[in-house]
Structure formats: structure tokens, C-alpha cells
Image (cartoon, rainbow, N blue to C red; front, side):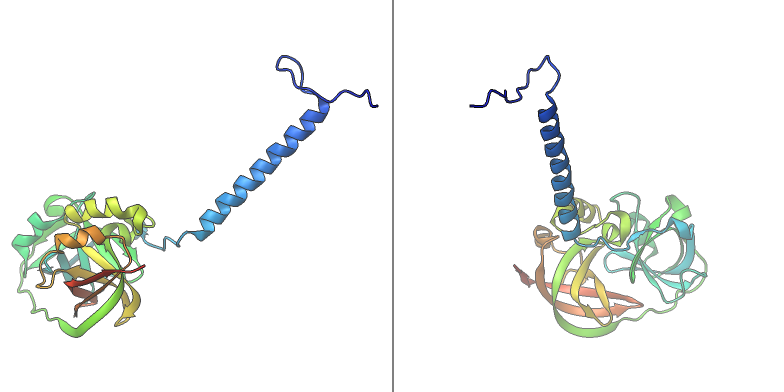
Length: 253
């Protein structure tokens, strides 16, 4: 019969050598396991994409025609080295605010706009500077702007707020972003539909009500969910606009 005593831990005494080895091994195992679990969860997440505030571009100032879709945007007529004529930029204010009060009086008119670009792929938005520094009328006759009807489409994808999606937040989409997206949309930030398939070369479409008015309130319940929707699509410059039919909205599994 062995008379060797098993190691025993007493709080006010030094830890026995054999127990020290055991505790060290368990500690290392915990670190490795938790690191592996963290890495697994990280790899499983969707790529947040390349969207970002492009502060590296510097402040951008261009001239164009202000349009309401009903969300404010500018169709650039006189650009610069970074933003070319023919580009269509959605407009947003600081934080979760819109620029409606400043843009509506200039609808259909030439205006100078200035601010910081948010960019994700071919989705572009301009966060305006405050007051007249951000948007102001300029002299001249606004050229007539046309839109190109692209027919009726049935699409699958997700409704997001355009500002966070373009780069104000990352990833800026998905259920984890639902509350933030709804606050942005309530504040007047233009909503964007992210299509799972390209429409005329783009996966991003500014989304409105069926008559071209604001996004129906009923759609807010389905922001950040994977849905299917039908509606008429038109091209405004290089921006696509989807006039959704609320009756066709369906949540997909």
C-alpha cells in the first residue's frame, strides 16, 4: 500500500508542485480553446466590406442639380478630379440627420454642395457641411435631368440605411444593425436596398415608396431582414432607384 500523500491545496500555503503543473496546463488549455472559439466566430461573420468615410479624399465640392426622390441627392454637372460629372450622390447631414430643410428649397436648381464622401463600391454619399457651406444655390440654368425606366423587377436582399451602409458604420447591415438603421431612416437618411443579384450592374438601389414617396412605415419592421420585393426600377445618372410595392414584400428564411 502506497504511503505517498496526494498533493493538497491549502489557501495560505504555497501551491504544491504537482498542482502547479496541473493548473498551468489547464490555464494554457483555456487560453487556446477560447482563442479558437473567438477565431471561429470571427471567420464566420460576414465581411463588413470596404465602406468608409473617405477623409483621405479631403473635402469635396461639386456643382449639380438637386433632386428629391423624395430623398435629397445631387446629380453632378461640374465635378472635380475625384467626382466626375454624371455622378449621382445621395445627401445626408451630420449624425443621423437629413438635409431636407436645406435641399427642398433648391429642388430642381443648380447648387454647390460640399462635404465628406462616404463610399462603398459604387454606392456614394456626401455628408454635407453645416449651413450654406454645405449646400447653396449658384447662378445658372439647371440642365434638364432625365431618368431611364428599367422595368419591373423581383429582388431578394435587405433594406439598410444608406449612410451606415456606405461606411459610417461597419458592417452597417444585418440584424445587429437593425436598431441603428431604423433610427437613421426615421431621421431622414436615404434608405438603400442591397440586392443579392446585380441589377443593371449594381447591387445598391435607393428604395422609395411605390409612388416615389418616402419608404412606407410598414417596411421599417423588415429593415435588416432578408426579404424579397417587387417594384419598378429606374436609373438616375449612375444611381438606381427602386419603387417598391409593399404588397409584394415577403420575409425569406
